[in-house]
Image 1: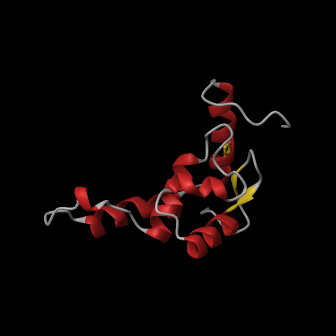
Image 2: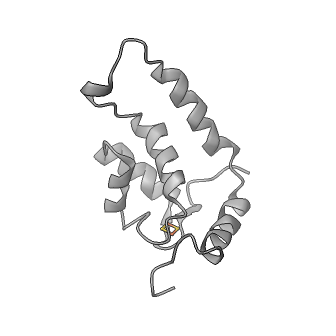
Amino acid sequence: MALKPDDMVCFCFHVRLRKIETFCRVEKPLHASQISDCLSAGTGCGWCRPMLKHIHLRICGEHIPDWRKSPEANIPEAVALKTDFLDALDVQNWAAGRQRHISEGHGKPPKDQ
Ligand code: FES
C-alpha cells in the first residue's frame, strides 16, 4: 500500500507526508536537504532522507545548476523513473525498515525517543 498523506515519513520528528508535501509546494526548496527546515525532518537517524529526496523530486523537480545543464540531458525521463518509488512503497515495510536502519547502527534517533 502506497504512502498516504497522514502516514509518517520522519519518525524521529513525527513529520507526516502531508506536512512535507505542503512545505515543498509553498517553500519550493531548491534542495531536498532544505526540507529539514520543516520540523527538522531528516535530521535525526537519517532513515527518511531518501524518502525526502523522492518527495522533493516529485514536487519540486530536480534543480540543476546552470553549470551542469547540457542540451543532451533527458531530465523528464529521469524524474519519471524516480517518482515511481513513492507509488510502489509499502508503508509497513517503510516503518520496519527504519528500525532495521537504527539497529544496524546506520543512524541514531534523537535522544527523546
Ligand atoms: S526517521 Fe527521519 S531522521 Fe530519523
